[in-house]
Length: 284
Image (cartoon, rainbow, N blue to C red; front, top):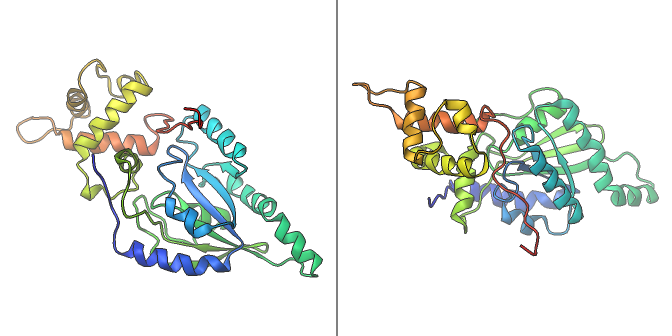
């Protein structure tokens, strides 16, 4: 599948981010733990430059735990501070305060030598659409400070939010990049809901997901939908429609509706903890 989605507001959001990033001490980059590579906007590296960075692997509760551990090791070896968490869990998000202080310890010490004490760190939060930035902010603050929604494009503009006496956070809209060089990137983003479903062929997308699950999580479809995984991807989607009683007038199975159910079951975790990417060493 060749998927690209770059609404006009993302261009202006990128320009605004480029201006505001100069005001910030550290960048908090939120990635989806299920697809850390595909959910990473390559433009962010160019915008961030040599500024300090903290990576959060969000939705770790939906990802395969063993694979998430491999990603943590991957980032640690690269010298990048990383936290894996479920951003809806406030106890987990509160760990970010200490992690930011650790990342910014050189700056804090430099301020101390200059006689500047307790100056709040300015952090910018960045990430693609629907990765959980606003959920993280609300969980950290303990109240609704940013709009959230289970669809991409909820946050439209930049806003400063006081997270604590030690940190001010600049929330930014989720932005993608103009063209995905690898078609697999667009497909994985579509799997997790970072692409607007209205522009997608959900039937084709779901059949691709079925193929991946059969290869990497054998019997997970059989256990969830009571179907035979030995059948073709199209036949399995048909069987899911029958199992879930998704029927059109006349009793014909509604495979498009079944496709939506399958994708929703993946995104919500009802299929189980599933990762769609593994770290690859330079030698592979």
